[in-house]
Image (cartoon, rainbow over all chains, first blue to last red):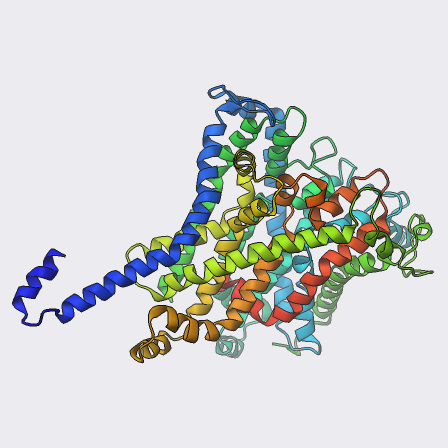
Length: 315
Length: 282
């Protein structure tokens, strides 16, 4: 404001153009904050307060219906020394690594196949998104039913094809449960990769392929030296997004196995839910799990935002 | 891209792979639908029939009839609708203003706010379900649609804002400037110029926010515990954990829950590439 008044003395008119610009600018700033205010307020209420509360809660013993009592670092010690937590972390790593690897490979293969011209391509491009578009609960229930160990369709099909003689209990067999849960997560998640990679593939300059063909490149060369580098930024962003969401995916496993049999499919989100609502039901313990998870999630988000900012600068 | 030099083996592999993918996509949907039309007697055979021998609407009739004191399943779909419509309205209206500020107005901290909204969009809100549960208990808004609608803003607002932001960016600001030269104030120029032009983007944001809210499970499971408030998603899950699982009803319920989403999805599919993945693909 001081510079505005000093400017005024130099210029004859009562309101200078500089003043007007400043008023307009201040107006714009105020409007900007005013327009953002509802979003910030609601998100602050629903995200920031709980965030702080989770941190505080993690130092308390708090049964669902009961009073909270301060226990210091006890929840953290209990969580970090709980063999079930170690199992959950291990399961989460296996679940996420295999899910993401297969989502990338299958998502990309399908995207590449759908760039080729063939009749019905438009329909195929939409239809392939169905696993991802269906409500999670409906899609998963359909799998629970198909994978049923006694009367499930899949067992019947496998028997008819002569691939098995005795039924497989996909969701309750110790050897099958985790691979099955992972496979269904891949089934639900690969279309997201197909979707983003299809869009990215359309931006690849066709002339590059023509030039490469003149130089005698084969299909693999073209993929490795042209396609992959061109879609790399999108692939990286999609992979990061999917990693964050897969790490925290809850409903799929919760409905399929609930974490069983004997914790073989318990991932960190399932473990958190169990700590909060099963048995003794200690919300403080569950909060400590969330707080332990947070730095990893936030690190991934920050890394993702860096990657995206870099891309925006490049464009 | 199709090349004559492609080997026969590779093409067979490709076709085989795509057939398998196609089958994995179509079969669960097919199985869901035909199971819902099977009578009870046909469901529990060791070798299931691959199309219903005696198609019946029994399952759907059961889903529409109350069980004792329990409301019929279709009533829980009403609850889902209230939660999804309510939260979508809040998300989209708040999102329009936020997205407008982030694309049209220049002010200090704009980039930081953009980053914040994106961070919230990516942030897995389920990490917060315990403190939200406690906060709602303390505020006395557990078992209310109001509470559930507020909790859905954790993904609704960032999602709507982020989608709308990318759409607003495609509308030239000069149009609004000329309206303002003609004497419109900021709000008028938004209402008469920007919003009509952004209508397709707003429609897409509405559809996808609605879908996300409609499909939500964990918050609905935790925050609404009284049966009369159960959403359809939670009701389906409790059907699964009932004493005897009536799979034709469960699949019928799954079909009913999927229908609105699939209809909206096909209606909005041309925006999917541009809008939903705007964050990832730009």
